[in-house]
Image 1: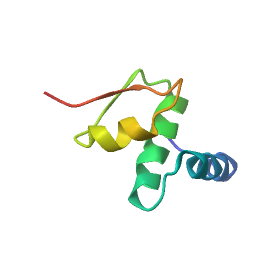
Image 2: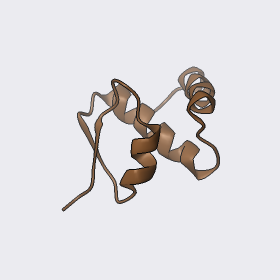
Image 3: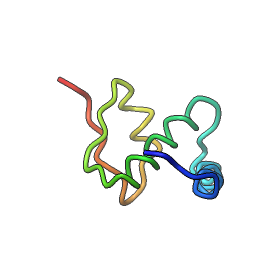
Image 4: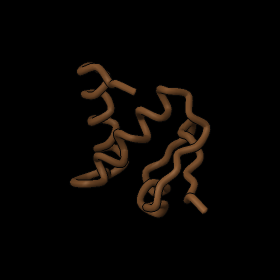
Length: 65
């Protein structure tokens, strides 16, 4: 899912509010894109980092089995 420049800037401002810095910013942007795409789940091997960034309305964070 592509995030146009305006949405990307909003997401970066939002990331600051949840404390996403460095590599966590990329995780946060994945969550934003998944939310925009209407995903109900986001699969990652890095569950702990994604779960710390998730907000209401974000897809459920899952670890592949």
